[in-house]
Length: 129
Image (cartoon, rainbow, N blue to C red; front, top):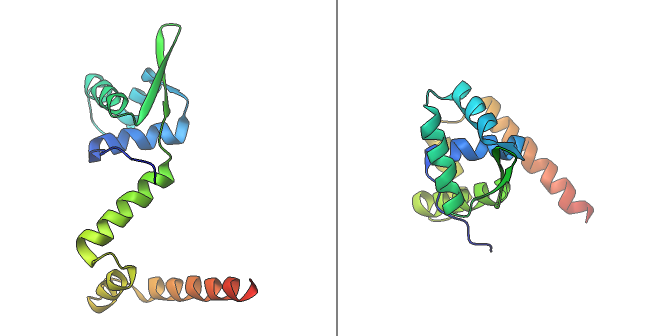
């Protein structure tokens, strides 16, 4: 599996904007992040610089602005973080996590119904193969 850099929660907020709108310039990132989070432009630019150093983003100068594109895919990052979370808190198994949520009444009837539907659809797909 591709090595994915450690990204802080704050950096992740910036990455979500880049993933959604890439290629995206510094002023565009600042504008879009500022609409969601009350950060100063310098803070956002610092996050962008850190992400470039970590090789999560690449930058290219176009005229007077820098334009950013991601070097890691969002789904790869989410997959890695999900696996780490499962391993850290639930011994690496999804069953344990889901059971924990069910036993502690953290899933609504609707969510349980949705899970059943997803699993049923998955069984149907597996049966067709």
